[in-house]
Image 1 (cartoon, helix red, strand yellow):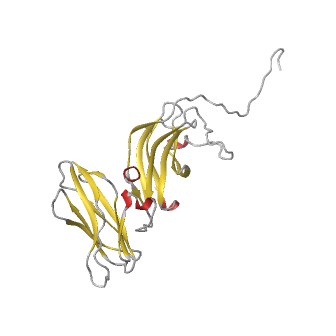
Image 2: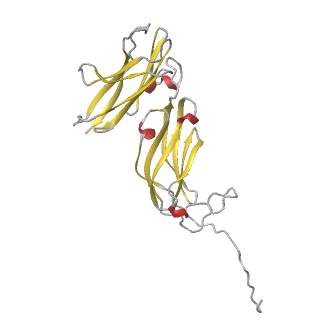
Image 3: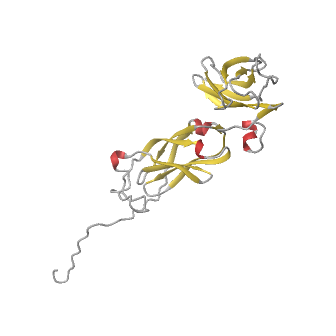
Length: 268
């Protein structure tokens, strides 16, 4: 100790830096999670974001305001990581700007983690200071176990089903708008007596043309079916109408079932 002076040896410390900037969405959110009204299985959303302060840190997916998934946007060589994971503060870093200022992000939602029905789905991105921006906020219908004829969100206009007798046929399309060259997924369920191993035709028409078969598929042991079709010859904006139809077949005691129609716009 020198006269009039005090020397303090510091072995560690924590500085709280001021970062008033929120992350910003760059462009649009795309992918099955963002473009489908009815979702099932694991679906993704892809987007780009930027931050002018401490950098992009994490993205989170919330369903009905409950966090379902959380992951680091870009580890930035290991620098974009909490240096002390033994406490509850997840924003302790080794530098003032530990994370990249921009990144392309893919957020995933495993719909098996939530119940079938209508849910509010949000995607949030946050920077290394904890500033958060919601880049996606939409009401979606989860449909992993369709129940044709039931009440509630599953029978909303985007997820209708048709009952005839003791059987019912549900039909959905993965997207309402698509580009030429991209594939569209068709899926649904046949419920009731004799639902397994039955043939379902997905049909299409435009304007007042005749119905044509896009794809034919056999239901599995649980009555589920799914098939895909890629658009290759749509060179101007065209609206197509699709439906599913149970093919008349040996051993199927009920009359042929036909679903309601689903519209899809294809752009060049």
